[in-house]
Amino acid sequence: MTEPITKPTNGNGAGAIELPQLTRKDFVSDQEVRWCPGCGDYSILAQTQKVMPDFGYPKENIVFISGIGCAGRLPYYMNTFGFHTIHGRAPAIATGLKAARPDLMVWVITGDGDALSIGGNHLIHTLRRNVDIRIIMFNNRIYGLTKGQASPTSELGKVTKSSPFGTIDFPISPLAIALAAESSFIARSVDTHTEHMQRTLERAGVHKGAAFVEVLQNCNIFNDGAHREFTDREVRDDRTLVLEHGKPMIFGKDRDKGIRLNGHQPEIVTIGQDGITEADILVHDETDPLIAFMLAHIYWPEFPVPVGVIRDISRPTHDQMLNDQISQAIAARGKGNLSKLLNAGETWTVE
Image 1 (tube, rainbow, N blue to C red):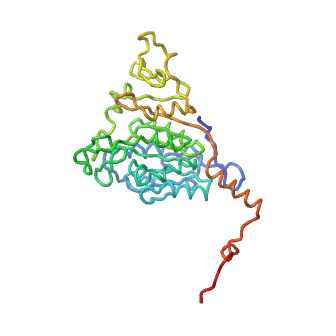
Image 2 (cartoon, helix red, strand yellow; image 1 turned 120 degrees about the vertical axis):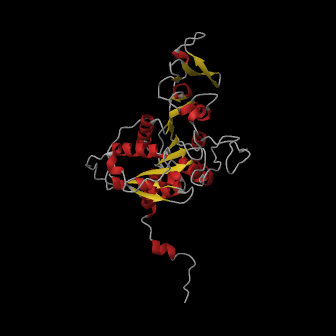
Image 3 (cartoon, helix red, strand yellow; image 1 turned 90 degrees about the horizontal axis):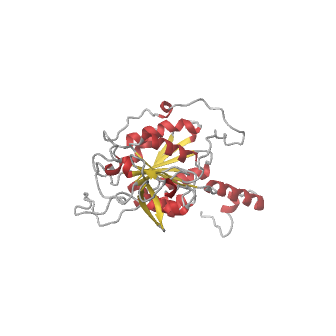
């Protein structure tokens, strides 16, 4: 669950650093933001910049790493260090950086195509290793940068430039992939739900371990209205389920709908009908694997779309275990000698 936000150490064990108070403006770079007018990326960028001062890290200790796609431009617009890497490989670069510099706060920015297609294995193994990074995946259900081809999250039957008769591929559930990879933090938010997105990013930022956040985002050029049927202001109360740890799964404009279990199956019920009370509604538990599995698989139109933190558990991080292993090896065998290693075994000199 939520951890208190603390100031980082200086990396030399000398305790907390006294930092100047930063604001959103300190995280806005001098680069012109170049996304299509009306793109949901603008909102994600704005909320990311707003929450950065809350973490207590100096700007030079924060790194944004991206792959290829419209989302990949975001590091240019953050006044921090960053890498714009190659297609699908941002998690691998981030893993290496975090291993070498565990004191850094590392964010990965990716899209549904970048993360789940060419980058699918990199994403899975980064999450299973519990690398202490935050992966924010923009999901607009389309390849936007390459002008509108079907992506791994495009709905079945979607007509695109690469599927003119409708895609015959079933879409991936990003949350289910993250859950199968044993990500220790999994959440979902929406580009237009700005306050909710800020809270979700803050939760991801303070989590120790692999944090995966799916942001449902609109591409108004190549897939306009990608999530409109359940995210528009007029319908979202009835068609989204806002999750809160320890509270019943209630939704609806009148707060009279809820999710309960009928055996092992979730079902929608109405409070006040057929003797249903709030006590019958399933209570959200961010540590319960069965609840997380259910939430990763229910979706509109059969169910309201869950938004918020799906899973938040604690387990050792990749950089912690790596450094512990190195320390144990040095204690057992002494410091290594690179020159001796390179000249060990069968060697020869070429003249």
